[in-house]
Image (cartoon, rainbow, N blue to C red; front, side, top):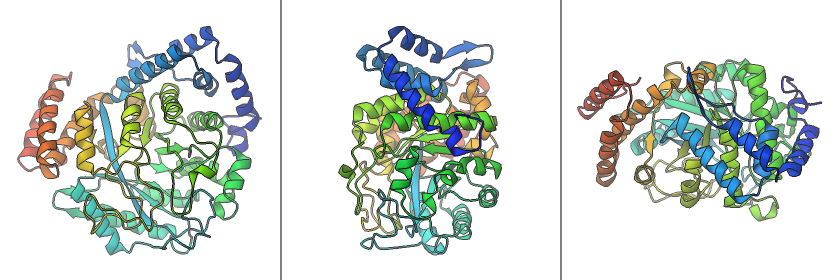
Length: 482
């Protein structure tokens, strides 16, 4: 029986509830009165505390996703943009993945790292190699990483992950520093999550892959990941271990997208019901071609139009959550969905173990890639592209380092007060990038953007301080934050 407050996976992700939700959505997908009322409920409202949004239940959001009336879909897209602007403005946070090891004992049928793949070279970075990778990423301009690793208790134990995190944080090269390490590793114990928390990680990220239990077990036929409940309940253990910020995601293309959409929102509702705070981020990866993986063998692929609608409906349903899109997607696709709710993107990404050090910006090794990278532009090119579109590329990590995480971050976000920090912090970290790493063309666009955006800071004191900090950055100082 469905119970969002339960700690049992099959009760907070209840198949019968999802099936009933999908039937309800199908029955009401042309119910204009209901759909208009759902959109009205979700719209941003000015209150005495600031701008607030009600969000939607998984059933309400599923009705929007099922609706195929063109003018109502366009209304959804406009609403998603309104919500994005209300809480995230025109800022886009930048990050890069860092693959530590592709040793893995699981047999996931959609991932080239699976244990039975004998064609892919196995590699694990030494601490010296981690250092060189981090220096290469710092020389690109990155400040925020997401570390990735296969699941292998012998080759990739928690001690190895912790050592890598310590190494990453210890490296200060020229003006570079990694200020936030997010962690995407396999489900583990409360004790290990506590160790990750004590190591100073940012967000713990774990993709569910699919919420459909029968499909999940078939897609993970052997290895620790086969255990559906243990995997699905990982976020509760992470939060019990002290990790404030967790990130959800499904791999769209494995199972029917409407089922996954409902399950994803039910998981978000569960975290809110049990822990008082929902997911810090939601990722929306789609299945991509890889070493011995042909996505055409899966018959649940979604086109760009459906993908855009999924993103818009997630933004409407979970208005305060950050949304991430990676270089799995093309420039054209990423361009389309930036206005619909995306707040974080990767740039200059390599999905190989040891893919950064020793390679030029237009080079990338393919022998240990987890998946094909569709957007292969350099970080500098992505930053300029975003600014040309009117966005502020942000390398900010201030909230994490100022303790604005978990419910503290969400309380500020839900009242719109976070904008008083985020806008100037974004401009200051962009200024650092322009001074230290940008090409002349990117720097020229960025300097103009910063001048214009500084004048939009509503608080006079904050505006004056931001201008002062930015001048100090030009003079060689670093790491100012609100």
